[in-house]
Length: 338
Length: 283
Image 1 (cartoon, chains in turn brown, green):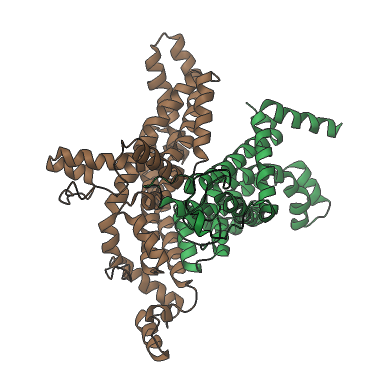
Image 2 (cartoon, rainbow over the protein chains, first blue to last red):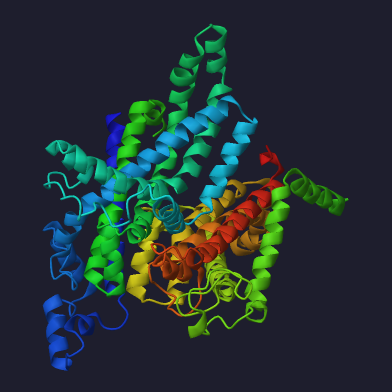
């Protein structure tokens, strides 16, 4: 077990090195001369040369890479041109909003898709099975941003049951809770402010559903397949022959064995959730890092974009590590495979 | 004999799954729009009309008009070429590059394999849409760079798939025989191995098309690549999005529906193609 975790940690470190190299290369692939870009439109040859020296762009690539590593170690991602603040400060300020949204989207997808997959597997090829599979495949064809807009149109404009898509909290009616974790729902609860908690939760419903909808298909599909396999296996037959209750067979015997393939597909789901966050934040006016990076990209604020890409990649690598470590706890077979 | 089997297989794939037939019909429709869009469109997609702003769908404008009086039906039809063009070129590029890299890695193994595998792992270490954004931001905001970004993020899937398939076949009897016959590595790969892995790769490509369309449309939705007033489905949705609060639903629903239709079509086609080419996985 320790050997496995050690090996997995080494893999994570090498992924992180790859990520840092790619982000570095991306930051040096700017169209035209980065120094001229950073110097601004009014710069002359002299001031461009000065900026180049100041940014260290006159040195060789390996030397630049080492100083880039040094900056990263100090948590320095450069300054944003649009906000004028250090990128790291901006990102950390906005990260909780995005993480909160992603968490709720993941929770929605898991809570809907896993029971759906289990249920389908108990009645394979029934009408219910076909309906579930069909609707999940249709859902997978909807672009997340389009789903978000449709939901806003239906539930806010037509039915008027959802709050307006104005971000994390309707600031006209409520004041944001004091920042403890940065996640509004959690902070409101910690403050004991039920009104704000409910308002923040209401703002989260539509974006979380739009984001989670696309993740339903892979999770439901793999749960169904894994459950079918587990239910058809010898140990399930033995458990059934031994007269164990149905619920116990389904949950303790079959489901626990089906969890491993499900945890494997989570990597893909995270990749999708972290990426589509950007689109959903745009639709719902969410003040997270996705909205931040969209304005940064459009304003050619490169330091902010690189910082964002790096942060998301690091987050993704760490999430995958966490899933793998959880998998070893769920299923001891993983430890021996490695 | 061979063609009889093929006919039966096609009959099976369509008969079992009528949806595949529907998908082929949608594909034909999309391809016709992409090829002859400017002749089919009832109006000039860029022509503004001050007298017909924000018209709801009606006889004159089946899909309504936008805030500048442009006909949305025409814009949706003409956009098909750009959307499908971006997705098809990105998928074709990843297909070719992934096949080449994967085949070399799988056949030669050793350091070649390790280096290519390392590069693919690094691409996969990013949330893919985020990497695509980073690439477009770094290379510059253009349609070509959207295609390049979409190609790069899809590359690992093809490369790993091809590597696995080649690796399995490397030691098979017929490949051994081709080597014994005095063929060098590249002819063996090109003439004996790759033709055998093309069919399953095609299934991958078809399943991948829908995702490539979503990715390219997502990038344009946030304002990358395609510039207004060029009609493109992602940009059309984002232009329409501002009118949701005032209830002008047709501005974003029709372009969005076109996207859904295209993605759904390619997903179904991929499933149908898999049934056709891989009878073992028919369930």
